[in-house]
Amino acid sequence: MVLLRETKRTSRNDVLEASAFIRSICVYLCEKQHWATVNWPFIAVHRGCGGDQPRNLAKSVTVAAAHKIMKVLGLDHLQLAMPKDQEDSARAFYGELLGLREIAKPAELASRGGVWFECGLLQLHLGVEEPFVPARKAHPAIRLAGYEAFLAKLEHAGVAVRVDESVPSMRRAFVADPFGNRVELIDSGS
Image 1 (cartoon, rainbow, N blue to C red):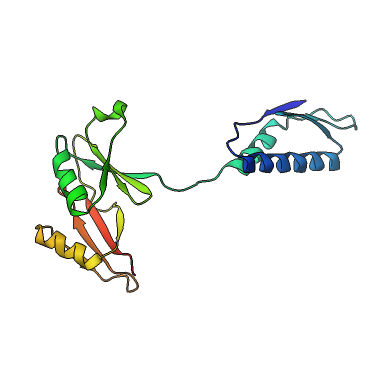
Image 2 (cartoon, helix red, strand yellow):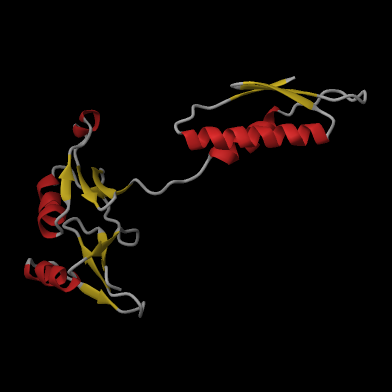
């Protein structure tokens, strides 16, 4: 006999999917001359007749159940490194020039330094790293409405803007934040 413990469910849809999955396990086991008793949240799987030794189905059933409920839902945040004690420079660039809204770091993390911003549905975290090395290849890509006005605003503030035309269907440019991290700017209309 094998017991499978249900994981915590957070929505009615998850429970319905789990119920359908359990029914499919029971149908499969019946076809293989096994039988299963379901006493929610446990499933007891028993080997059918035939004189064979019981086999351990826990791993295959658990893996199959996990694949049924596992899925990546999206990105939550992106983190860039920054030098120590440069939060004001980060606020000036990301907050004032790019217009991102600063959000409070959890109290447990505030003592580490750095600053967090909202960027659409995602967050952009700047965390202190010592020794600091700027990201010159890895980068966030920020989609902008008013692309031309943003580029002009950045140039007026002394930020070097490099327009890139290597992707014909996309208007984009690259800048460096005050720490040398690469940042891509994309026209929302392209």
